Length: 105
Image (cartoon, rainbow, N blue to C red; front, side, top):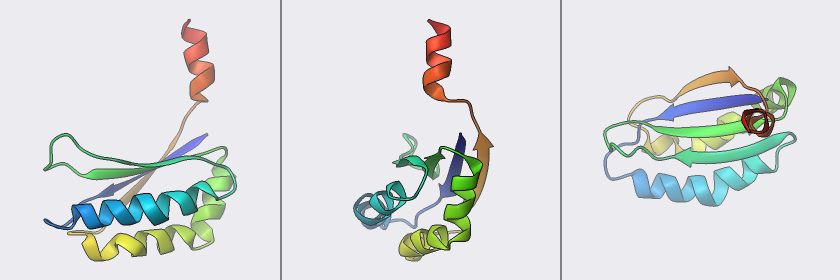
């Protein structure tokens, strides 16, 4: 599995608009992509921290295909007017969470 985290800093007063677009347009579009397991916006408890857009993918190939198709850029551009600085994408490999949780029991 692969997890991609995009750190986002929204401009003051723009958070509600950005969250609506993310939840109504971005998340549903990403969830339709081949191999996508999850897409969600993580909201910081400390309002001065960044938001995180998290996507989970079955394989690195699925995530790479999403990125190279231009869909990632299209999704970012939907909320770009609300950014106070450019987003930062970080990519992580992970084990299947269900397998890991089962192994702990």
